[in-house]
Image (cartoon, rainbow, N blue to C red):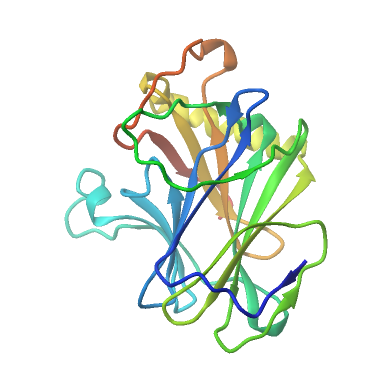
Length: 255
């Protein structure tokens, strides 16, 4: 896939996507990428919790996972830093491009679809096909310098979306499918176990995710773990729900 030099979406755009499998009635969490209108900052988070917690790729090259001012009110003591994790590493690519972050969505993390509220505002969402049992969707957020050129990415990549940031930085989001591994699936089990221990099962439509660092590149990674409840403990009828933050999050060891 060749990434173009021209990415025409205006600064301040928001890209939303999720993995959807209508045949099985399953989906991932919905993820949002919001670009800054005036700077080279890019913000990433789950739809259910982005107002409280978000992942920020800053123009400075620093990447942070931090509570927002709203989310910190009930979670961070006054005067303490809202930041939870910090990275200074990205994966360099040719022509001024780099991999800013990755996200993995395992087929085993897909959860029963949540029926939208009839009054909910309809927003455009990019639906990615399911990877199939035993596989993951590997999403990569690529950032291109304003004065850089196009770039060719090897492998079978699918475009998720693109945008421009306020300083002219270009954002190109791509996804590919890859086999999962026993280690990855064990990690998902650990995330779900921690979520349930924190009371996730008491919430109407719980979702869990965690984050860490890619061992090979040092790039930050988000991990969508889906509904942490075992299938037999999930209700037959999924409620319509659009309430407050409903997600358990955690930092994985080894970061």
